[in-house]
Amino acid sequence: MKGDKMHKLRFPRRVSGWSVAKKTAVYVVLIALCLTFIVPYIWMIVTSLRTETAYISTGFTLLPTNESGKLEFHFENYTEALTALDLGKVFVNTLIVCAVNTVANLFLNSLAAYAFARMRFFARNGIFKVCLFSMMVPGTVMLVPNYLICDFLGITDSLTALILPFVMSVYNIFLLRQQFMGVDKEIEEAAKIEGAGVFRIYFRIVLPLVKPMLIVLGITTFMWNYSNYLWPYIVNTDPSLRTLSTSLAELMGADYDLTVKLAGAVVVSAPMIIIFFILQKFIIGGTMAGAVKG
Image 1 (cartoon, rainbow, N blue to C red):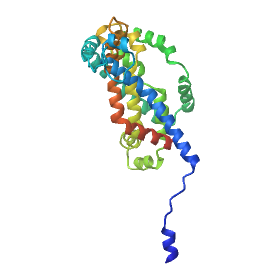
Image 2: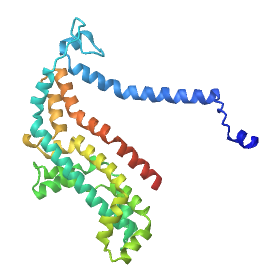
Image 3: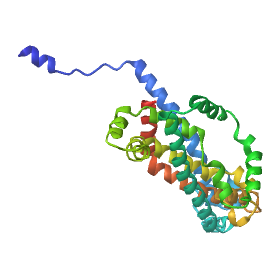
Image 4: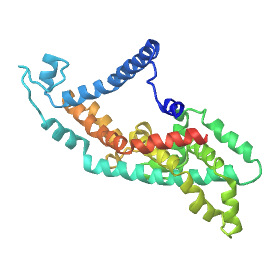
């Protein structure tokens, strides 16, 4: 009995000075990196609530103060920025492009990934290697060919031109293929025995099993389209078809105070920050699931 009682006792582990030093160093580095990213954004928000004269006279501050150092908020900067951005129309355009592109991207890329992972057809591995090789081509190299194709199809100066060239992503196909290859084939074989067809297995069985990765790719695809600037600037010249990124770029080049421009930057960046904080558990969970299965 005494031996059992002694066995159940738990003694605190000794923490060495070296392990404490390592943890302290890690936390110091993480805090420094965190401040590196957070402080510029805080400065942007604070400066957007000041006048340009106050900013020039006092420089960097952590609170929106005037020339005398007194706390003062200038929300009219945001009113002016919203008007300059034409936020209502531009936000609708951006939302349409991002939503349609994300849905089409996930649907088409998951179909292609499932075909590469499960189906047997001529030169499957060779075609997949060619797709992977295309990832090495810089995106800027494809701007001219994409523009010529859109011009040939007659879809320039339209929202279709912002969607069609990006409905496929080799990177997304690669990640989804790896996920599909990690799904147990016995599940699919059992469904085939029960009479399920390929598309039913794909929609009802396989896709739900890779849902975490689909969520991650959906979020990243939406965010990429949201911040895409160069292609919309090239392919669209109609002011009514501007997206948030191009509208913000025009605001930055216009004759407005610095504080108004920073207010516009805060307005444009805020939705992505909010989306990240709301969906961060899905991003982390999906990424970890992908790392384990990969």
